[in-house]
Image (cartoon, rainbow, N blue to C red; front, top):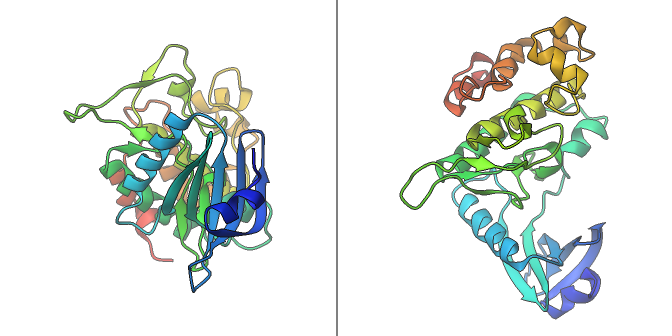
Amino acid sequence: MLSNKQLAPRLGYTWRRDLFSGCFVDVSVVEKNEDPEKLQLVMKTVKQDLDRNQREFTTHMKANEGTDHIIKMIAMEKVDLQTVFFIELGSMGDLHHVIFESPAVVPCHRYFQHLIVGLQHMHSKDIIHLDIKPENLFISANNVLKIGDFGLARSNKTDNGDEIMLERSRGTHGYMAPEILVENSRWRGPPVDIWAAGIVLMNMLTKNEPWKDAEERDAQFKMYSQNDLNRMKFHWGGLGNATTLVLKMLDCNPANRASLYFIENNVWFKQND
């Protein structure tokens, strides 16, 4: 298999630097040779599962139409057994870096509003992300948060408009809603994205995480599910005026969990920066 540095010139791009290299995925920054502005893009090369890659491309393209809060999918190329995506670059890095590795103050309210606008846009197109976490949220040069990485994303509606109930565990531990982790469970997609967004908001406001997994064998989550917040290690006071909103987003019963409409009409959410 060719490296991105070797592959980029064959596709009309100039390699600039590598961001990540793994067994199945290589990610680099490149420039399109014919672009007079020399706009930098992300080149993501996936080395397996071509059918899944096509679905990711189609879903991402549908999701990013008409919004500034989803990273743009630019193009897809197939080279031998590899799939190459060209994607908008979040030049300020991902939100995980901003929260946990940068000394800068995180504009939590602004970024959370951007995240909810992006989710609202996706859900209005019957697309659920299923892997909302700081590593998949990117910051542009003009300080706009954008949702990226649609590897797990999918439609939650049939062609007839009926909602699809999902099954099997999907996502990243620490951000998965409790209903996902129940064996043989079937669950709705939108509340899962809202749960993950609630955890992201906690991360931004406190630079911490409340638990490792949202299941009873995790002692911190067990205390939370029993409403025994005072015994938890997590500092709830760090959430400030967003506490009520976070607790509603993290309702363990997905039927009672905050909807996007509820979030958008919350007093803390609506306040100006």
